[in-house]
Image (cartoon, rainbow, N blue to C red; front, side, top):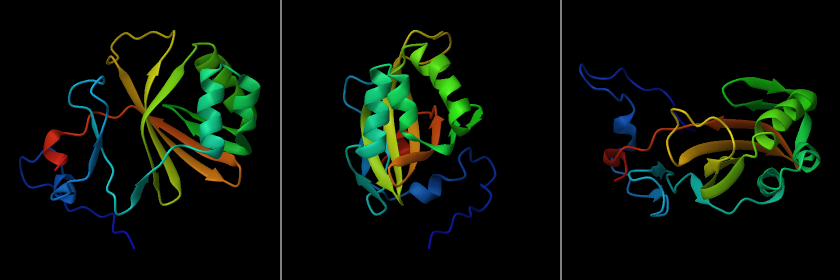
Length: 169
């Protein structure tokens, strides 16, 4: 069983979870072509590096082909997508896909993937024809997929900060 509680940080400490990562030396880092300092901590005891398959691979392929019908076919009827806002159900997800993925010609280039307790985590360089004001170059997003059967039931997309080098032991 996983204990997710964390004691309050000592006075002056800026990252209360830092002690949880101490002593782990199994970080995945992005290829050299990516931004300096980008690394993703994926502990091997619970994360298994893998290549996306099934609905996740289908999502990436359909997204990069700007194929809305193939994209929405990957989702369950009552799925949830959260990318700064929540989109519940296929109609709302389809509207989001048409406007912000297909409409902005967003491409997803996976750089690291893992399976963690049934979740599929994909770190990807994301590009497209959207307003990039204030965004890092490259823009690396983390996609957290929950799959049941052959459908995506939840997709959470997060723009993470790079894993600090002191946490990549």
